[in-house]
Length: 474
Length: 159
Image 1 (cartoon, each protein chain N blue to C red):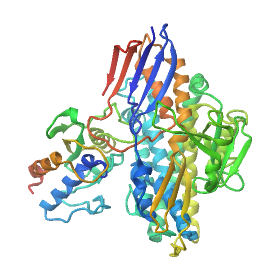
Image 2: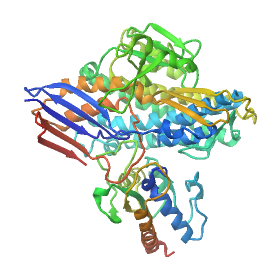
Image 3: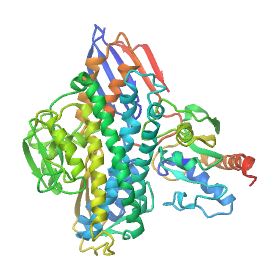
Image 4: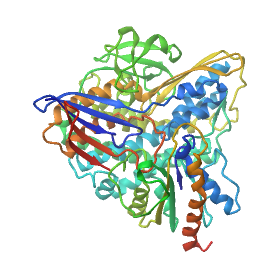
């Protein structure tokens, strides 16, 4: 008799998802699937809107990484208007992006993923949360809250609002950086670098003490993609896209505007989340990973000193080959946080940063524009087509989480086969399956957060569709 | 503190309630791009949020009372729900991108040594589709929530 365990929805991620674990007659895992069950429709309902509204409209698709959508949209809008933003505006947008990376990465490690490590995967759910972190290290918990708040404050000082900022306009941004804001942001950076380094030490100690888990938890080869500069170093805001092989060899580098030549989107019947792949290799041979793990595997180095120190350790983790373990996403995320803090300081020290030359006038409509950057979760594309009046006729968005759709499903399958015994459901076992998803920090669709939404339900269902066991966690 | 997506109809009921409260207090409504954080510091402050995040613990710690206003899924009841909040961490979603109100209070208590009295008021969401208009059923319930907020706030502030 075939059985099925359903975990629905996945806790501690945005949106609506579930995992089904199909068991064979012996109660062993046969196959696992990760389902994103909510349809969004953002691309479609943007059609007909004036193209210049997109930086404000599209950021509403998310409450945690709106800046990524805001800035990717701004790039696409510039291209539609045939204008290149001023150098000052380019730097100010990148500064805002660093704020976004700091707040998103900081929250994920210290408040989302950290409890599993600090308290242990088998700890009681009542303490396996930020309360546990506070109990174990209250000083670090306070510093972590302040780290995230700092990232949000950078966004607010530039865009007037912590969430859904009003900043980018066609050809640039709507205001220069105030000198007092530059001083305030710069003065905080050292403290937050120290917090991030505490997080790195915490993670590396945990990894060292849990080497078996690091070596067997969803460890698998794949290709990797991320944005790099001309010298191959990491860039989170702008550059060319580099795809590397399982062995770390460069396969291709391309300008983001040419992405349709290289990136295809595969549709699976069990989920609304599309799976991008490297077109020349086809599906599924062309699957790859993005986000912090993908970026550090794709990049050759990091331009800032403290992050580069960690990058050297990273490159040594797997003997010079790409790092394959899913749990290493967390280390990569912290290294990127370090880079974002250092990069913010570089930008603030740039002599141009206070200049008021913040926007260029638009030229003629081009009819089409692509915007791309590295969102916290991975590469984000916005592609707009307009008519002669600047009204959108078509919109294509490939969101960061989508690139990792295959990897998340594969990770869940591996972890379920390793840890799930259908005859003995345990909290820790099921949490490991969820952790495989959480390591990717997916943002599926944070559209609504109504009270009572998203309880977790685990059902054991036999081949006849009968529920033989249920575990509920709300 | 109103929580929800203003573009998903009833999920954004909090913004409607906040603006109704502001009208009763003789203040201007928050604009579509305003969240209220720039005006903090009055006897009764109102903010709107897409979702709750941990640093809100730093905001609420300065207050005696905090009312959280949200929509709830229809299965939780057809009318206004009222729940006195205790500062306690909740396992589910606690460390998600979205925090729960009681967890915000608990974080304030643990990190800063105090937390305001908390109350959660929610209305049943009838329509979570795209749009800024409330469903007629939920719109009709907004005045009652406003009265409840002002009554509860007045218990301490005397306003």
